[in-house]
Image (cartoon, rainbow, N blue to C red; front, side, top):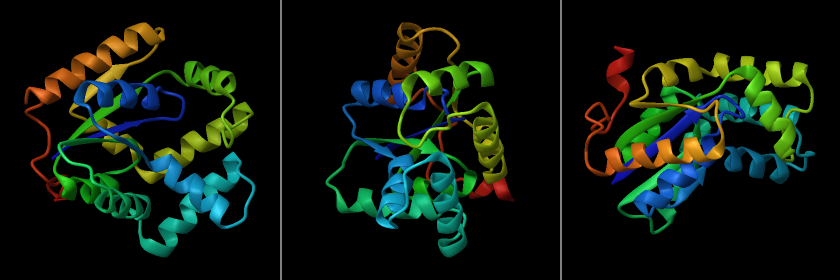
Length: 197
């Protein structure tokens, strides 16, 4: 199975890129953020940025640093997904290691400047998003503490998303075609543990 893991800071355009890649590969998209949001609701907490970050931290304390990936992999294994899948919202090498157990993992990082990302977050007004610059910066710092920088640095493909949706969709489709044709030679053959050695 081909597993495309999409990573990037909040507001970078991960979901847009994940959707385009999934369309090219005829693959389902699994969102790591949805796993955390569902857990917030399950615990009876209001769905806001601080509770999302808090529950993500609690899950990692209870189940280890790859907790969200462990929960997501359980869900994927219970599904009938075959061929290719797209995982939206990977945050760390520990998560990549767990997800790589599903198949050949290709990491796609999406990058945009902090100002661009903050403006996008305000425009989309998704429940649970940061609503102030301070909250946005704190969420960025939490992502960095979780190790997203290492995952971005080791990505097989990088998409810079400072333009509009037309440009990023075209780039995402190009990357998806490269993955489908086996051109992502750096894509993992099933593990990221070698990077920790």
